[in-house]
Length: 304
Image (tube, rainbow, N blue to C red; front, side, top):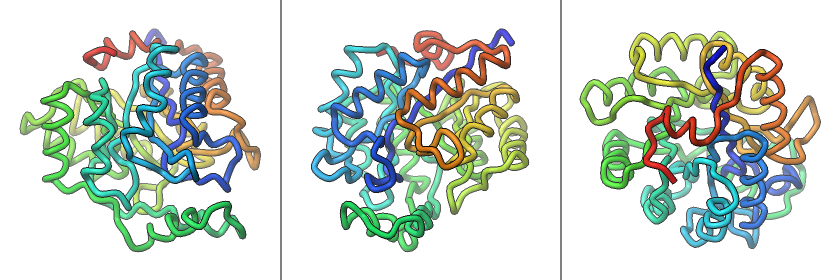
């Protein structure tokens, strides 16, 4: 129980749309405030995407990131983690532009090409605030998310080796853990690895306790003592799987990117509400929460 839990908060993402929740941060001020409040609630890492403030559409424009990054860095000490995932409709260069511009201490990295199906969300809504919302969701029926081996190696070299970022290695299935282990054996990446088990995205491994145990046992077998893991359960699996992951020796990720809810049928009113909830659960179980600087030291980050 002496191990402290690292909480990551993914504040807006590129999956959910303005119609789905009035609490989803869309503007630079909303994203900045959501990040700062999440950090104050206990999140050591803030996983960041941007939105076009005109209509809330996911954006990889570095100017949209510049509109909130300085305020986050000024008003809290959280680790800034910039996504390289963007969305499946963005080109690779578009997805990497924000991280290349900001050169953060941490970036996310999806560990392979996959069907990333969020189109089932269309069935829950009859009307949309913006035409792009349904169109973007529907496009995931036809357009895969692409990170080839060549893409992965370029990202590791560019953002990691040249610019000093460490990665949140997002693994959506056991095959992506195999890829990660192969790069570790080849010396293209170095320990300690921070591995995010992502469960519940259609096209990846499902959100169940059994699948989490499979992910953990696979990583133990392939990565040994050279990694730390965190657990992301999509939708209603967010809190249960995060809690299970912590009990299994891992860290946790919450945030409105991954789930819009705080309970059955009840929308979360903020990212900080989700951070507070998982913190309360963990502390009730006897765990302590890692500060940003403690997480930096454990993950060997270059610093803010």
